[in-house]
Image (cartoon, rainbow, N blue to C red; front, top):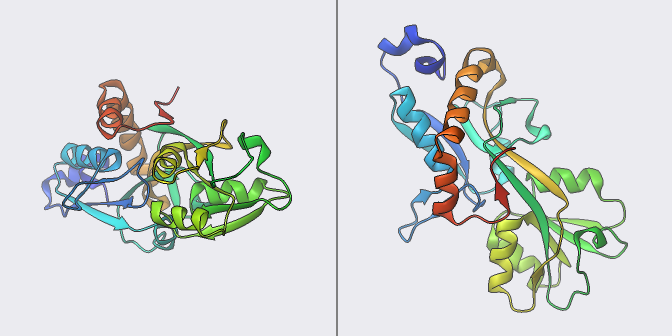
Length: 244
């Protein structure tokens, strides 16, 4: 049982291996990197608190982008995943109640006449997005006239798509959109949003019945006692909020 010490107290007396927590390294809402390259931020803080609750060490399992995280689903590579509550991942995962709401928006390339997110879905507009991400799934389902351009996740891939003429806008969480705009003169974050993403703790479906009640209780406590709010403030996140 992956979460045995929490979900089944009878297993607490057996030697426990570390809790393996999957994180997506290219998403700055969930993961920050210090000067030494060590991962930190919201998802790491929550994973650490969960491991402490279980009385287990924490082992971070990092994926460079959403596509690699998605490829790990169903492979038994980790015990809990802290990422978007994406319906496309539902074949393999069960999701906790959300711990964060995240706005998705667009950052427009320099010289673009676009001003609002609602103007993007037009013929001739090229929309870059991180392959396999929650924004990718939403835009794949909803775009009717614009062209989707999939790129690897992360700030550098977004910058390249906008500066090399491969995309007119980049669709991502608003926090990353602002970070991109701050480093590229002439770019700007469009008004409005195209989606609201819920961040949750996921477990393999086979573990859901026994593990999820305790995971949900942990998330509720982390919201109630201010842990999530403190982690948001420490990371300086924008375009996010606690679940209503």
